[in-house]
Image 1: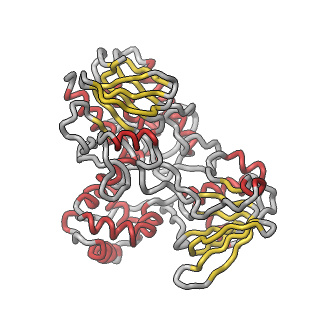
Image 2: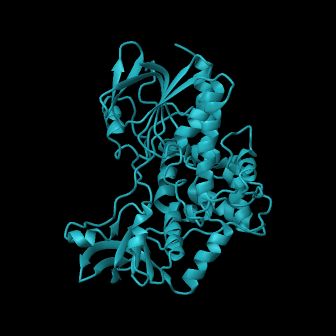
Length: 451
Protein backbone atom coordinates (compact mmCIF):
# COMPACT_ATOMS: atom_id res chain seq x y z
CA UNK A 1 0.00 0.00 0.00
CA UNK A 2 1.11 3.57 -0.69
CA UNK A 3 0.72 5.97 2.25
CA UNK A 4 0.89 9.74 2.29
CA UNK A 5 3.45 9.55 5.10
CA UNK A 6 5.68 6.74 6.31
CA UNK A 7 7.21 7.27 9.76
CA UNK A 8 10.14 4.96 10.53
CA UNK A 9 10.93 4.46 14.21
CA UNK A 10 9.24 3.65 17.51
CA UNK A 11 10.68 6.10 20.04
CA UNK A 12 9.61 9.48 21.35
CA UNK A 13 10.48 11.31 18.11
CA UNK A 14 8.11 8.99 16.26
CA UNK A 15 5.19 9.46 18.63
CA UNK A 16 5.67 13.25 18.67
CA UNK A 17 5.61 13.26 14.87
CA UNK A 18 2.50 11.07 14.69
CA UNK A 19 0.64 13.22 17.23
CA UNK A 20 1.39 16.33 15.20
CA UNK A 21 0.42 14.63 11.95
CA UNK A 22 -2.90 13.70 13.52
CA UNK A 23 -3.31 17.35 14.41
CA UNK A 24 -2.30 18.71 10.98
CA UNK A 25 -3.33 16.31 8.21
CA UNK A 26 -6.78 16.08 6.65
CA UNK A 27 -9.00 13.06 7.44
CA UNK A 28 -8.34 11.63 3.96
CA UNK A 29 -4.58 11.34 4.59
CA UNK A 30 -2.91 8.04 5.50
CA UNK A 31 0.08 7.43 7.76
CA UNK A 32 2.07 4.25 8.36
CA UNK A 33 4.35 3.87 11.39
CA UNK A 34 7.03 1.21 11.09
CA UNK A 35 8.63 0.01 14.33
CA UNK A 36 9.25 -3.21 16.23
CA UNK A 37 9.64 -1.80 19.75
CA UNK A 38 6.85 -3.21 21.99
CA UNK A 39 6.97 -0.07 24.13
CA UNK A 40 6.14 2.17 21.19
CA UNK A 41 6.74 5.84 21.87
CA UNK A 42 8.21 5.35 25.31
CA UNK A 43 11.68 4.32 24.23
CA UNK A 44 14.37 3.29 26.67
CA UNK A 45 14.30 6.42 28.80
CA UNK A 46 10.58 6.43 29.59
CA UNK A 47 10.08 2.72 30.17
CA UNK A 48 12.01 2.53 33.42
CA UNK A 49 9.87 1.76 36.48
CA UNK A 50 12.23 3.06 39.16
CA UNK A 51 10.84 6.15 40.86
CA UNK A 52 14.34 7.61 41.25
CA UNK A 53 14.69 7.84 37.48
CA UNK A 54 13.45 11.37 37.02
CA UNK A 55 13.12 13.69 34.06
CA UNK A 56 15.92 16.22 33.71
CA UNK A 57 13.48 18.92 32.55
CA UNK A 58 10.75 20.41 34.78
CA UNK A 59 7.24 19.07 34.24
CA UNK A 60 6.01 22.43 32.99
CA UNK A 61 8.21 22.15 29.89
CA UNK A 62 7.39 18.55 29.00
CA UNK A 63 4.07 18.87 27.16
CA UNK A 64 3.92 17.02 23.83
CA UNK A 65 2.47 20.11 22.18
CA UNK A 66 3.88 23.58 21.66
CA UNK A 67 0.47 25.22 21.84
CA UNK A 68 -0.64 23.31 24.98
CA UNK A 69 2.25 23.86 27.40
CA UNK A 70 0.36 22.67 30.50
CA UNK A 71 -0.78 19.32 29.06
CA UNK A 72 1.67 17.15 31.05
CA UNK A 73 1.07 18.95 34.34
CA UNK A 74 -2.67 18.56 33.79
CA UNK A 75 -2.21 14.84 33.05
CA UNK A 76 -0.29 14.43 36.31
CA UNK A 77 -3.06 16.19 38.21
CA UNK A 78 -5.78 14.10 36.57
CA UNK A 79 -3.88 10.91 37.47
CA UNK A 80 -3.46 11.86 41.13
CA UNK A 81 0.23 12.70 40.76
CA UNK A 82 0.06 16.50 41.13
CA UNK A 83 3.30 18.38 40.60
CA UNK A 84 4.13 22.04 40.20
CA UNK A 85 5.45 23.41 36.92
CA UNK A 86 9.00 23.42 38.27
CA UNK A 87 8.96 19.90 39.74
CA UNK A 88 10.64 16.87 38.15
CA UNK A 89 8.34 13.97 37.34
CA UNK A 90 9.34 10.33 37.08
CA UNK A 91 10.26 9.03 33.64
CA UNK A 92 7.75 6.24 34.01
CA UNK A 93 4.93 8.76 34.47
CA UNK A 94 6.10 10.63 31.41
CA UNK A 95 6.10 7.44 29.37
CA UNK A 96 2.51 6.78 30.46
CA UNK A 97 1.55 10.34 29.53
CA UNK A 98 3.06 9.89 26.07
CA UNK A 99 1.16 6.63 25.60
CA UNK A 100 -2.11 8.15 26.81
CA UNK A 101 -1.71 11.23 24.62
CA UNK A 102 -1.43 9.19 21.46
CA UNK A 103 -4.24 6.85 22.49
CA UNK A 104 -6.48 9.83 23.24
CA UNK A 105 -5.86 11.36 19.83
CA UNK A 106 -6.59 8.06 18.09
CA UNK A 107 -9.81 7.61 20.07
CA UNK A 108 -10.92 11.17 19.50
CA UNK A 109 -14.29 11.60 17.86
CA UNK A 110 -12.82 14.38 15.75
CA UNK A 111 -12.07 13.18 12.24
CA UNK A 112 -8.38 12.58 11.78
CA UNK A 113 -6.12 10.89 9.31
CA UNK A 114 -5.77 7.13 9.19
CA UNK A 115 -2.77 5.76 11.09
CA UNK A 116 -1.60 2.16 10.68
CA UNK A 117 1.00 0.77 13.07
CA UNK A 118 3.19 -1.86 11.45
CA UNK A 119 5.12 -4.01 13.92
CA UNK A 120 8.17 -4.79 11.82
CA UNK A 121 11.70 -3.60 11.16
CA UNK A 122 12.52 -1.78 7.93
CA UNK A 123 15.51 -3.53 6.38
CA UNK A 124 15.79 -1.77 3.03
CA UNK A 125 14.53 1.11 0.93
CA UNK A 126 13.66 1.14 -2.78
CA UNK A 127 12.99 4.13 -5.02
CA UNK A 128 9.83 3.51 -7.04
CA UNK A 129 8.88 5.08 -10.38
CA UNK A 130 5.61 6.58 -9.09
CA UNK A 131 7.46 9.08 -6.89
CA UNK A 132 7.38 7.06 -3.71
CA UNK A 133 9.93 5.31 -1.54
CA UNK A 134 9.24 1.70 -0.68
CA UNK A 135 10.47 0.21 2.60
CA UNK A 136 11.22 -3.51 2.68
CA UNK A 137 10.20 -5.09 5.98
CA UNK A 138 11.63 -8.07 7.82
CA UNK A 139 8.21 -9.78 7.62
CA UNK A 140 8.43 -9.85 3.83
CA UNK A 141 6.04 -6.96 3.20
CA UNK A 142 6.70 -3.60 1.56
CA UNK A 143 5.23 -0.23 2.50
CA UNK A 144 5.64 2.87 0.35
CA UNK A 145 5.26 6.54 1.16
CA UNK A 146 4.96 9.88 -0.63
CA UNK A 147 6.66 11.53 2.36
CA UNK A 148 9.12 9.87 4.73
CA UNK A 149 10.00 10.84 8.30
CA UNK A 150 13.00 9.06 9.82
CA UNK A 151 12.66 8.96 13.60
CA UNK A 152 15.42 6.47 14.33
CA UNK A 153 17.63 7.10 17.30
CA UNK A 154 21.38 6.73 17.44
CA UNK A 155 23.06 3.55 18.61
CA UNK A 156 24.71 2.92 21.95
CA UNK A 157 28.46 3.31 22.02
CA UNK A 158 30.46 0.12 22.21
CA UNK A 159 32.64 -0.73 25.18
CA UNK A 160 36.05 0.91 24.70
CA UNK A 161 38.00 -2.35 25.12
CA UNK A 162 38.42 -5.74 23.51
CA UNK A 163 36.73 -8.42 25.62
CA UNK A 164 37.67 -11.38 23.41
CA UNK A 165 39.95 -12.89 26.05
CA UNK A 166 37.25 -13.01 28.74
CA UNK A 167 35.60 -16.32 29.53
CA UNK A 168 31.90 -16.78 28.83
CA UNK A 169 31.14 -16.64 32.55
CA UNK A 170 33.00 -13.32 32.88
CA UNK A 171 31.20 -11.86 29.84
CA UNK A 172 27.91 -12.47 31.61
CA UNK A 173 29.09 -9.88 34.13
CA UNK A 174 29.67 -7.27 31.41
CA UNK A 175 26.48 -5.23 30.99
CA UNK A 176 26.50 -3.68 27.53
CA UNK A 177 22.94 -2.35 27.80
CA UNK A 178 22.29 -1.21 31.38
CA UNK A 179 18.65 -0.34 30.62
CA UNK A 180 17.83 -4.02 30.66
CA UNK A 181 17.46 -3.68 34.40
CA UNK A 182 17.23 -7.42 35.04
CA UNK A 183 21.01 -7.42 35.53
CA UNK A 184 20.51 -5.62 38.84
CA UNK A 185 18.89 -8.71 40.37
CA UNK A 186 22.12 -10.67 39.86
CA UNK A 187 24.37 -8.24 41.72
CA UNK A 188 25.29 -9.22 45.28
CA UNK A 189 25.10 -6.46 47.92
CA UNK A 190 28.88 -6.34 48.45
CA UNK A 191 30.05 -6.81 44.85
CA UNK A 192 32.41 -4.38 43.16
CA UNK A 193 30.99 -2.51 40.19
CA UNK A 194 32.89 -0.52 37.59
CA UNK A 195 30.82 1.85 35.46
CA UNK A 196 32.36 3.06 32.21
CA UNK A 197 31.13 6.56 31.45
CA UNK A 198 30.12 9.32 33.86
CA UNK A 199 27.02 10.92 32.35
CA UNK A 200 23.33 10.85 33.17
CA UNK A 201 23.00 7.10 32.59
CA UNK A 202 25.72 6.49 35.16
CA UNK A 203 23.74 8.38 37.82
CA UNK A 204 20.61 6.40 36.92
CA UNK A 205 22.43 3.09 37.35
CA UNK A 206 24.10 4.10 40.63
CA UNK A 207 20.74 5.06 42.12
CA UNK A 208 19.11 1.89 40.78
CA UNK A 209 21.79 -0.17 42.53
CA UNK A 210 21.31 1.70 45.78
CA UNK A 211 17.52 1.31 45.62
CA UNK A 212 18.00 -2.48 45.45
CA UNK A 213 20.12 -2.58 48.58
CA UNK A 214 23.58 -2.50 47.02
CA UNK A 215 26.26 -1.58 49.56
CA UNK A 216 29.44 -2.37 47.65
CA UNK A 217 31.94 -0.04 46.00
CA UNK A 218 31.31 1.62 42.63
CA UNK A 219 34.22 2.87 40.51
CA UNK A 220 33.34 5.26 37.69
CA UNK A 221 35.89 5.50 34.88
CA UNK A 222 35.63 8.09 32.14
CA UNK A 223 38.08 10.11 30.08
CA UNK A 224 37.76 13.23 32.21
CA UNK A 225 36.07 11.98 35.37
CA UNK A 226 33.33 14.62 35.19
CA UNK A 227 29.78 14.07 36.45
CA UNK A 228 26.54 15.97 35.68
CA UNK A 229 25.61 18.84 37.96
CA UNK A 230 22.25 19.49 39.58
CA UNK A 231 19.43 21.92 38.91
CA UNK A 232 18.87 24.66 41.46
CA UNK A 233 15.98 23.95 43.85
CA UNK A 234 14.50 27.39 43.33
CA UNK A 235 15.39 28.53 39.81
CA UNK A 236 15.95 32.22 39.21
CA UNK A 237 15.13 34.22 36.07
CA UNK A 238 17.38 33.34 33.13
CA UNK A 239 20.23 35.69 32.34
CA UNK A 240 19.87 37.91 29.28
CA UNK A 241 22.13 36.36 26.65
CA UNK A 242 22.25 37.94 23.18
CA UNK A 243 23.47 35.05 21.03
CA UNK A 244 23.81 37.32 18.00
CA UNK A 245 26.33 39.48 19.85
CA UNK A 246 28.53 36.56 20.98
CA UNK A 247 31.87 35.91 19.25
CA UNK A 248 32.02 33.28 16.51
CA UNK A 249 34.74 31.21 18.16
CA UNK A 250 34.39 28.67 20.99
CA UNK A 251 37.12 30.41 23.00
CA UNK A 252 35.42 33.78 22.53
CA UNK A 253 32.00 32.44 23.44
CA UNK A 254 33.35 30.85 26.62
CA UNK A 255 35.07 34.09 27.61
CA UNK A 256 31.85 36.09 27.02
CA UNK A 257 29.64 33.66 28.95
CA UNK A 258 32.03 33.70 31.89
CA UNK A 259 31.86 37.49 31.91
CA UNK A 260 28.04 37.35 32.01
CA UNK A 261 28.15 34.73 34.79
CA UNK A 262 30.26 37.03 36.99
CA UNK A 263 27.30 39.39 37.20
CA UNK A 264 24.79 36.64 38.01
CA UNK A 265 23.99 35.10 41.37
CA UNK A 266 24.26 31.58 39.93
CA UNK A 267 25.90 30.21 36.75
CA UNK A 268 22.74 28.23 35.97
CA UNK A 269 21.05 31.50 35.08
CA UNK A 270 23.43 31.84 32.15
CA UNK A 271 22.79 28.30 30.94
CA UNK A 272 19.03 28.85 31.25
CA UNK A 273 19.30 32.07 29.25
CA UNK A 274 21.32 30.32 26.59
CA UNK A 275 19.05 27.27 26.44
CA UNK A 276 16.32 28.54 24.04
CA UNK A 277 18.97 29.94 21.69
CA UNK A 278 21.37 27.01 21.56
CA UNK A 279 20.37 25.93 18.05
CA UNK A 280 20.89 29.44 16.72
CA UNK A 281 24.28 29.61 18.43
CA UNK A 282 25.31 26.26 16.90
CA UNK A 283 24.16 27.25 13.43
CA UNK A 284 26.21 30.43 13.63
CA UNK A 285 29.44 28.48 14.12
CA UNK A 286 31.73 27.42 11.30
CA UNK A 287 32.39 23.72 10.79
CA UNK A 288 35.89 24.25 12.20
CA UNK A 289 34.49 25.79 15.40
CA UNK A 290 31.90 23.04 15.72
CA UNK A 291 34.71 20.48 15.54
CA UNK A 292 36.66 22.44 18.12
CA UNK A 293 33.63 22.38 20.42
CA UNK A 294 33.23 18.61 20.06
CA UNK A 295 36.92 18.00 20.62
CA UNK A 296 37.53 20.29 23.57
CA UNK A 297 34.37 21.67 25.17
CA UNK A 298 31.72 18.95 24.88
CA UNK A 299 32.29 17.22 28.28
CA UNK A 300 31.99 20.53 30.14
CA UNK A 301 28.94 21.52 28.11
CA UNK A 302 27.27 18.22 29.00
CA UNK A 303 27.69 18.49 32.77
CA UNK A 304 26.52 22.11 32.89
CA UNK A 305 23.74 21.84 30.33
CA UNK A 306 22.28 18.36 31.04
CA UNK A 307 21.63 18.65 34.76
CA UNK A 308 19.71 16.36 37.11
CA UNK A 309 16.79 16.96 39.46
CA UNK A 310 17.93 18.61 42.73
CA UNK A 311 16.92 15.77 45.08
CA UNK A 312 18.45 13.16 42.77
CA UNK A 313 21.69 15.14 42.67
CA UNK A 314 21.84 15.40 46.46
CA UNK A 315 21.28 11.67 46.84
CA UNK A 316 24.03 10.91 44.33
CA UNK A 317 26.44 13.44 45.85
CA UNK A 318 25.90 11.82 49.24
CA UNK A 319 27.15 8.49 47.86
CA UNK A 320 30.24 10.21 46.44
CA UNK A 321 30.98 11.98 49.72
CA UNK A 322 30.61 8.71 51.62
CA UNK A 323 33.21 7.10 49.35
CA UNK A 324 30.85 4.47 47.94
CA UNK A 325 31.20 6.03 44.48
CA UNK A 326 34.69 6.96 43.32
CA UNK A 327 35.64 8.72 40.07
CA UNK A 328 38.68 8.01 37.91
CA UNK A 329 39.81 9.98 34.86
CA UNK A 330 41.63 7.92 32.28
CA UNK A 331 41.58 5.75 29.18
CA UNK A 332 40.69 2.07 29.42
CA UNK A 333 43.37 -0.16 27.91
CA UNK A 334 42.57 -3.79 28.74
CA UNK A 335 40.10 -5.97 30.64
CA UNK A 336 41.39 -9.30 31.95
CA UNK A 337 40.43 -11.99 34.47
CA UNK A 338 42.69 -12.28 37.49
CA UNK A 339 40.52 -14.09 38.80
CA UNK A 340 37.93 -11.28 38.99
CA UNK A 341 37.86 -8.78 36.16
CA UNK A 342 40.79 -6.40 36.16
CA UNK A 343 40.54 -3.12 34.25
CA UNK A 344 43.82 -1.49 33.32
CA UNK A 345 43.62 2.21 32.43
CA UNK A 346 46.01 5.05 31.68
CA UNK A 347 45.57 8.00 34.01
CA UNK A 348 44.57 11.16 32.20
CA UNK A 349 47.40 13.66 31.84
CA UNK A 350 50.16 11.16 32.58
CA UNK A 351 51.64 7.91 31.40
CA UNK A 352 50.82 6.20 34.69
CA UNK A 353 48.84 2.97 34.51
CA UNK A 354 46.42 1.87 37.23
CA UNK A 355 44.12 -1.09 37.75
CA UNK A 356 40.56 -1.43 39.01
CA UNK A 357 39.04 -4.71 40.20
CA UNK A 358 35.39 -5.39 39.44
CA UNK A 359 32.79 -8.13 39.64
CA UNK A 360 30.64 -6.21 37.17
CA UNK A 361 31.40 -3.86 34.27
CA UNK A 362 28.55 -1.59 33.17
CA UNK A 363 28.59 0.29 29.86
CA UNK A 364 27.27 3.82 30.41
CA UNK A 365 29.37 5.46 27.69
CA UNK A 366 26.28 6.90 26.03
CA UNK A 367 25.34 7.25 22.38
CA UNK A 368 27.67 6.67 19.49
CA UNK A 369 28.79 9.72 17.59
CA UNK A 370 28.35 8.33 14.05
CA UNK A 371 24.61 7.96 13.82
CA UNK A 372 24.24 6.27 10.44
CA UNK A 373 26.68 3.41 10.88
CA UNK A 374 24.64 1.56 13.52
CA UNK A 375 21.61 1.03 11.27
CA UNK A 376 21.53 -1.36 8.29
CA UNK A 377 18.57 0.61 6.89
CA UNK A 378 20.42 3.92 7.06
CA UNK A 379 23.55 2.40 5.56
CA UNK A 380 21.46 1.11 2.64
CA UNK A 381 19.80 4.51 2.19
CA UNK A 382 23.24 6.11 2.20
CA UNK A 383 24.42 3.65 -0.44
CA UNK A 384 21.51 4.70 -2.63
CA UNK A 385 22.35 8.37 -1.99
CA UNK A 386 18.96 8.98 -0.39
CA UNK A 387 20.72 10.32 2.69
CA UNK A 388 24.29 11.26 3.55
CA UNK A 389 26.16 11.85 6.80
CA UNK A 390 26.46 15.42 8.01
CA UNK A 391 30.00 16.88 7.88
CA UNK A 392 30.64 16.03 11.55
CA UNK A 393 29.12 12.55 11.21
CA UNK A 394 26.69 13.18 14.04
CA UNK A 395 23.85 11.83 11.94
CA UNK A 396 22.08 12.71 8.68
CA UNK A 397 22.75 15.88 6.69
CA UNK A 398 19.52 17.92 6.76
CA UNK A 399 18.59 21.53 6.02
CA UNK A 400 16.90 23.99 8.36
CA UNK A 401 13.53 22.35 7.54
CA UNK A 402 14.85 18.95 8.74
CA UNK A 403 14.84 17.63 5.15
CA UNK A 404 17.60 15.38 3.81
CA UNK A 405 20.04 17.26 1.59
CA UNK A 406 21.48 14.27 -0.23
CA UNK A 407 19.10 14.49 -3.21
CA UNK A 408 17.28 17.86 -3.36
CA UNK A 409 15.62 16.81 -6.61
CA UNK A 410 14.05 13.72 -5.05
CA UNK A 411 10.26 13.97 -5.35
CA UNK A 412 9.72 12.06 -2.10
CA UNK A 413 10.75 14.34 0.76
CA UNK A 414 12.78 12.62 3.46
CA UNK A 415 12.59 14.36 6.83
CA UNK A 416 14.60 13.54 9.95
CA UNK A 417 13.27 14.15 13.45
CA UNK A 418 15.31 13.74 16.61
CA UNK A 419 18.92 12.91 17.42
CA UNK A 420 19.95 12.06 13.86
CA UNK A 421 19.54 15.73 12.88
CA UNK A 422 22.11 16.92 15.45
CA UNK A 423 24.53 18.09 12.76
CA UNK A 424 22.07 20.84 11.83
CA UNK A 425 20.47 21.58 15.20
CA UNK A 426 22.83 20.17 17.88
CA UNK A 427 20.29 20.45 20.71
CA UNK A 428 17.67 18.01 19.41
CA UNK A 429 17.35 15.20 21.94
CA UNK A 430 15.20 16.86 24.62
CA UNK A 431 11.40 16.96 24.48
CA UNK A 432 11.11 20.79 24.17
CA UNK A 433 13.26 20.67 21.02
CA UNK A 434 11.76 17.56 19.46
CA UNK A 435 8.18 18.76 19.85
CA UNK A 436 9.03 21.95 17.94
CA UNK A 437 10.75 19.99 15.20
CA UNK A 438 7.93 17.42 14.95
CA UNK A 439 5.40 20.24 14.68
CA UNK A 440 7.37 21.96 11.91
CA UNK A 441 7.77 18.75 9.92
CA UNK A 442 4.07 17.91 10.23
CA UNK A 443 3.17 21.42 9.07
CA UNK A 444 5.54 21.16 6.09
CA UNK A 445 3.96 17.86 5.01
CA UNK A 446 0.42 19.15 5.51
CA UNK A 447 1.13 22.39 3.64
CA UNK A 448 2.69 20.62 0.66
CA UNK A 449 -0.35 18.35 0.30
CA UNK A 450 -0.55 15.62 -2.33
CA UNK A 451 2.02 15.76 -5.13
